[in-house]
Image (cartoon, rainbow, N blue to C red):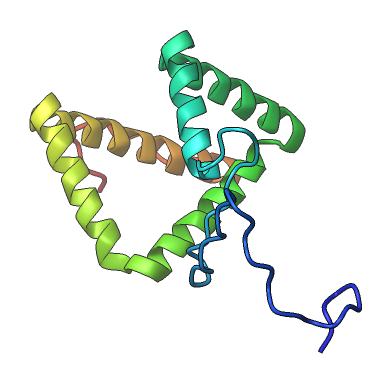
Amino acid sequence: MADIHGKPNEEPEKPREGERQAPEAAPAGKRRRRTKGAGGGMTVAEAGRKGGQAVRDKYGPGFYEQIGKKGGEAVKAERGHRFYEEIGKKGGEAVKAERGHAFYEEIGKKGGESVKASRGAGFYEEIGKRGGHRVRELIEDAKREEGQTPPTVERGETEE
């Protein structure tokens, strides 16, 4: 059998004196590329991590937040707000497929408990009232647009 250059396959060359022998092939998905150069011996992931730490040490951790915001604004300007809606929906569907509906229930409950601990139980009562008022306004606006003027009902009064 021949290799990609049309040469017949031969036994692999033995390493010369002083050369490292190539590591045995790792299983698929577990291979690590090694950087070339004088230092060698470092994976690409290790080199990236080392570079990231050097940048963090030089510019501070807030630097990543700044460049992330810049990048996000550039993508928003190029692709629009709807792009973020689409990728968010895809991501949510992927998480739901992987972890199930119960995962969202669990994180929602944790989030609610966290808000209750930081803002107090009265916070939910306050936003519930605001939401109720807003829903009533939206219903009245929709009826007005359809030509149906709803009677104004004062709080505490009932329609007869």
